[in-house]
Length: 156
Image (tube, rainbow, N blue to C red; front, side):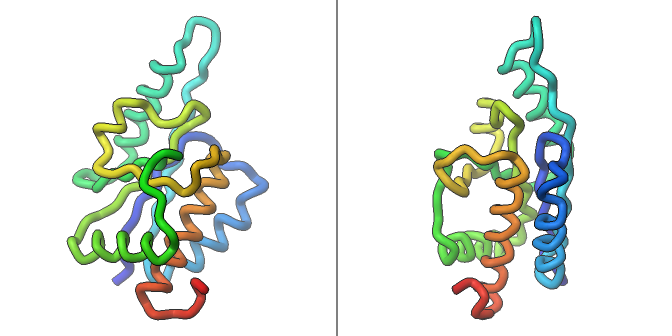
């Protein structure tokens, strides 16, 4: 049975990434049922504060995840692992029967309240990445992790 994962991301898809994202999702199908859920970004304009917008996006992200999900926020200062370490981390969650839900923030990142609301914080890189690039990197690392766990040589 494919391991279920949710990735909740703020913002509309960038057409330039469509093919790459679809390919990664296709490669993951034998290992995982990945639900990528997009939530609408909150506009920050005259009279709107960034913190309030981030909080509204945080509510949208968490609402998009299945109940009882183990929320994992993506932050540049989260725990950074190599591919083997990420695979081990993922395998531990699989063995524990946890349903992971990864959260990717909007233009202003994830709301500070999610630091406490997420069970874990993971970093894909200390660099700031566009949303769809972060999604692409996450999908690639998930694929590598599943191939490592399956003993497949792809990850090398």
